[in-house]
Amino acid sequence: MDVNRLDFYIGLSLAVSSSLFIGGSFILKKKGLLRLASKGSMRAGQGGYAYLKEWLWWAGLISMGVGEAANFAAYAFAPATLVTPLGALSVLVSAVLSSYFLNERLNVHGKIGCLLCILGSTVMVIHAPQEEEVASLGAMANKLKDPGFIVFAVCVVGSSLVLIFAVAPRFGQKNVLVYILICSVIGSLSVSCVKGLGIGIKQLFAGTAVLKEPLFWSLVICLAVCISVQISYLNKALDIFNTSIVTPIYYVFFTTSVMACSAILFKEWLRMTTDGIVGTVSGFLTIILGIFLLHAFKDITFSRDSLPVYLKRGPQGFPCGQQPYVALPNQDLEG
Image (cartoon, rainbow, N blue to C red; front, side, top):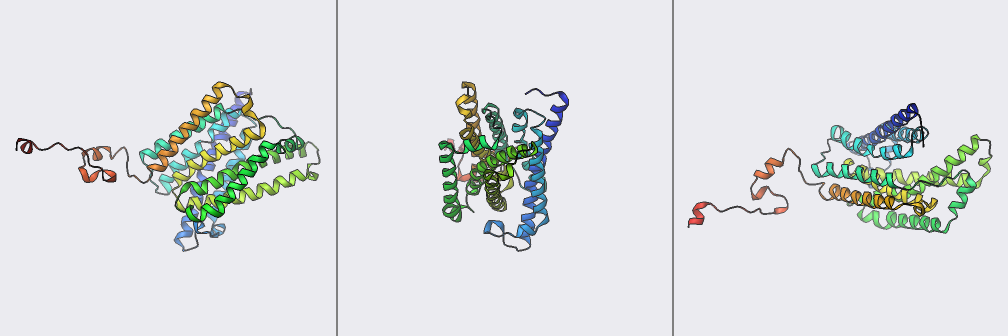
């Protein structure tokens, strides 16, 4: 898509500001949840909703809304191949701000994991197929009736119910992936609803009576339900786990779910080239490696500055009880 230089810079500015607002929103929400915890209120991770009375949490929610609006507006000025990958900057913004305002240490493994998640997500988005144009709610309705999408939607709803009622009560507070998976799979449907509503709003401004369409109001209801579930379980994840861990993993799973839903709904994968397939697979494998570094080594206190100390420590200084090879003294060898 050709845009002039002014439009390019406007779109770039909107995309970057979107990442700043969205990345900052996680910090504001976390600060609000920590304030509630210090007051003795029932925490979100335990099923409480006291955060609805906390102004910092609402500031975070508003910040996220502003960021999403800026991201939406950016698509009107700059190519999608520029705007979409820049969404990964919110992960970096959140990780950096959490180290300053939440005192959450991000070790070397976590920093490398963040970079790999951003790199893999960027490569995956760049090589992803383009969405098929849908210009009306009628065309959207035909897409939603496709058997492939119906099966996908049923699987999403079914897996979400299993996670919410069977898995989350037992493992939600122990495993960071449980709550994030719920947010991510539900998010794939919410993005589809947003796209349908966007099409309907465009038609409304063009003079079409879309408010009389049952599909329009069905999308509104579905979007409200999906967003409510996402907000609830994202708050639980932020309340229990480290923000620098939640943010990148949520971004990766959410992006993957949305791309899968979009591919099934709009059939872009049928037009993918070999380069696109290789790029998507490579990006996905990079994301998996980044998640592994973030999740497997998050509790290890290790940084670049401590490397000389680790190299000089004795057997008791090594993690996991590992015993390094130590040469015997000369006198022992002589004996």
